[in-house]
Image 1 (cartoon, rainbow, N blue to C red):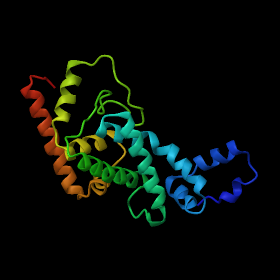
Image 2: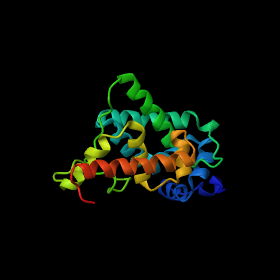
Image 3: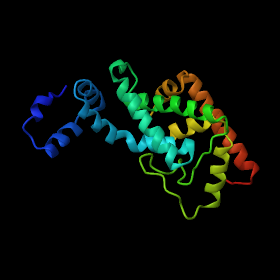
Image 4: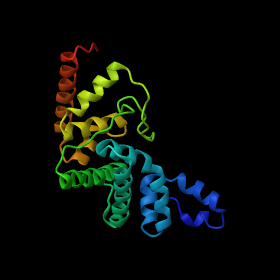
Length: 202
C-alpha cells in the first residue's frame, strides 16, 4: 500500500496526481483516516454512477439527488466495507441499486427510463445527453428494453457497462452467478423475440 506520507510537502496538484495513481482499495483504506481522500474516489466513479441512476429515474434532478445520496451512504459506511471479492465499484452499484429500489417503491409507480443515448452503444462514463436523431432500429431496441421488468432492465444496464463479471453483478442484484447467466440469456431471448415481432431484422 502506498504511504501517504510520501506526498506530504508536494503541491496540491502533485498530491492529487499521486492519489490518482492509487487503486480503489488503497484509496478506501486511506479514506478511513483522511476524509479528503474520499474525494478522489468520488471523482473517479461519480460519472458512471450518475449515468446508471439517470437511466433508472429518467430526470436530472432526481438523478443528481440520488447520486449524492449514494456517495454519502458509501462514505458513511466506509468503516464497514470489506473487499472480500466485491470491488468498490460493485459496492457502489449495490448501494445505488438499494436506493433506487426505495425510490421507486416510495413513488409506487412504473419507473420512467430514459434511453436517449442508447445504453447498449454508449460508453458508460458519458454524461447522458438527448440525441437529436435516432435510427429506427435504435428506437425499437429502446422500446423493447423499456418493456422489460425493472430487474431485467437493470441487468441490461450493468452488462452494458462492461465493468462487471456475472458474479459481481450477482452481488449487486443479490443473486447467484448462475442465476445471472440464466436471467441474462432469457432477457436476450425476450428482446430478440419482441424485435422480431416488430419486424426488426437483426
